Image 1: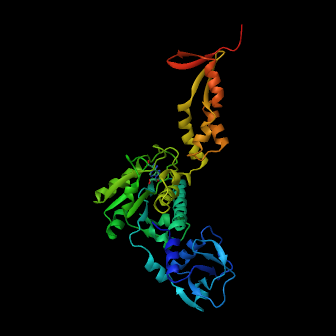
Image 2 (image 1 turned 90 degrees about the vertical axis):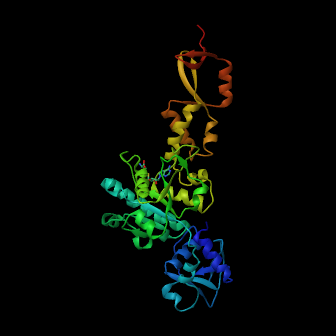
Image 3 (image 1 turned 120 degrees about the vertical axis):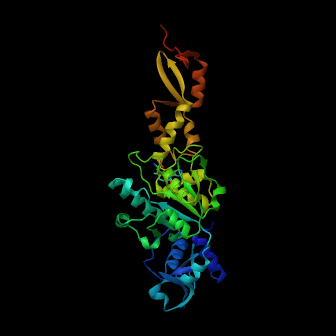
Length: 364
Ligand SMILES: C[S@@+](CC[C@H](N)C(=O)[O-])C[C@H]1O[C@@H](n2cnc3c(N)ncnc32)[C@H](O)[C@@H]1O
């Protein structure tokens, strides 16, 4: 799937344009200039025009800064004075019609506390930002939108598809009869085979009190009762959902990194995983590696220090996170060669059904 900036670049290339400037001194700073300009054109805020004199600077079609150009983005008020070469309508006509909708299902809205509702609204607003980094905002659908949500939504709702009816109602209007429901409790893991659906559904759920376990599945049941085929899929990191951030906007970003950027699930998760989530997973991983020592009658639980390098390949952990988890689990990290040495000078013993390596250092 192409980013909006790529679709825009293709259109510019077709017109023989290989770079564009910007006729606005206060244009926002951004990571991906072409994506931002494309969004503004699409939203009818401006157009690409032919200018009489080259602009001072420009961006090429890969987004790199280059010398000036005879073509530039001009906000609507200025565009009128020039010859328009790419209008909002022209860009819109280039948008593929088979791109999926990303639906945030708000059917559980009333099960949330006031604080949780604010969090849902914030994460939805952040999802709007996420989608704009890759595609365009109308592909974001908010279903079951009510007045309370509208009041809490601090972003332009008219830029997304805000739907007051049910998700099933929206899908039927669009003729979509099969969806992927992202659900942490699904049996099956999301895979490329699922990328052919016309809609992905994320639960508009925040669960700070642990009172909404399994609520995502209810979204699936509701859809199935309406005759929609639902593929429930989970996102996992090396076989486990622990360590996968569960915020709505993070799940959307993981999905887009896979769909648009072609990243693997693991790579996609790493783009959003905070050290906090990484530590949760590390807490589950490290005990598997512990070895028990009994040194002069005192118990020590030891892991290899080198595990840090292994885990930091697929968990966003820093050395201090590794140390924090060791402390919490009462573990000691030693270099592999020191562990080998300890093994050499120890004798194995089974104590209470567990293997200990016993070392006597003190001589009586
Ligand atoms: C905070 S989660 C809500 C989870 C809810 N407590 C439950 O047990 O169903 C918000 C939404 O993010 C998505 N999500 C979170 N983690 C996920 C995962 N590991 N795999 C797939 N979807 C996930 C789901 O769509 C879910 O409805």
